[in-house]
Length: 324
Ligand SMILES: NC(=O)c1ccc[n+]([C@@H]2O[C@H](COP(=O)([O-])OP(=O)(O)OC[C@H]3O[C@@H](n4cnc5c(N)ncnc54)[C@H](OP(=O)(O)O)[C@@H]3O)[C@@H](O)[C@H]2O)c1
Image (cartoon, rainbow, N blue to C red; front, side, top):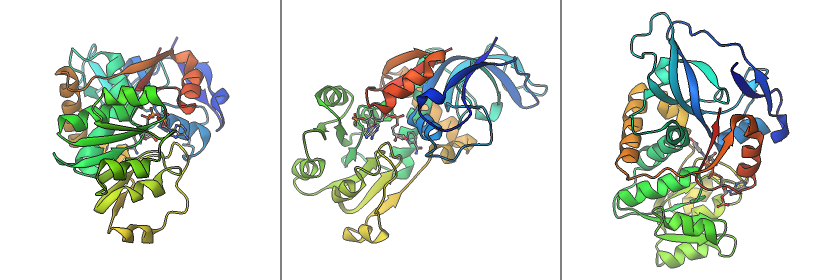
C-alpha cells in the first residue's frame, strides 16, 4: 500500500507523520509514478515551519523533487509510457511512495542517471542553473561569493562555477565543510565560524569585491554580503536559512549602484522549454562527470523527520534523499 509523510499543521519535525494511501488513478494528462527516491530541501523546512504560506491541503505531503518509474497512464497520455524513468520538481506533494502527476512537469531520465542522483539534483541542480545563467549571468573570469558552499545547492554550484572558469569564494561552517567545498570547485573557502567573511573577501579580492553574491542564508548575512560587492555588483538572495532579512533598505543599494534580485526556481521551471533545456544540460553534466552529485545523507521515507532535524541543525553536507 502506498504511504505518505504528511503534516496537518505547521511546527517542528514532530508534526510529520505517516499515513496510508489508496493507489491513486491518473486522470487525463497525468501519469502514476512509483518513486525510487525523493529529495529533501530547505524549502520543505520553510513550509513545515510556517515560514512559507501553508497550501490548501489539510494533510500536506511535503517534498518538491523526486524521481521514479511511470506505472500507469491517464487516458490521453501519449508522450510517456509505462516503464519510463522520470524526475520532476514542483512545490510539495513528493513525500509519498506513489503519486499522480501531470506530464507537463516530468522529464525523462538518461539511463546512466539513477533515481537517487536525480532526486538529489533536480531541484538543486536546476537552481544552480538559473542562479548562474539567469539571475546573474556569470561570465568566465569573474569572481563570486557563494554562501552555504558545502550544502546541497552549494556543492553543485561550486563545480558548475569551476567548469565555467569563474573564481568561486565560498563560506561554510567549520573546517570539514570548507575542505569538502574546496574539493568541489571553490577556489577560496571562508569558515565563517572563525573568520569575518567580509574582511576575508576584501583580502582575497585585493579590496576590489566580487561581481555577485549568491546568498541563501538571509538575515545573518545580507548586510555583509552587500559589503562584499564591487560597484555595480549583484546580490542574488535565494533563501533565508537563518530567517528572512530584516532591516534591508533600498537605499543600501546606493553604496555601489547594486542590483538585487530574489528569485524562485518554480517561476523558471513553469516554462516548459526552460525545464527541458536546463534539465538536459544538468543531466548531461552529471553523465559526463562535470558534476558529481553528493548524496551524503539517505533515510527511509518513514524517517523524514530525522532528515529535517539534521538539515535544520546544519549537520548535513551535499544532498539528502528519502527512499520509499
Ligand atoms: N529560491 C530558490 O529557488 C531556491 C531553490 C533551492 C534552494 N534554495 C535555498 O538555498 C539554500 C540551500 O538549500 P539546500 O536545500 O541545498 O540546503 P543546504 O545548503 O544543504 O543546507 C542549508 C545550509 O545553510 C547553512 N546555514 C546557515 N545558517 C543556517 C541556519 N541558521 N540554519 C540552518 N542552516 C544554516 C548551513 O551550512 P553551514 O553549516 O555551512 O553554515 C546549512 O547546512 C536554502 O536557503 C534554500 O531555501 C532556494
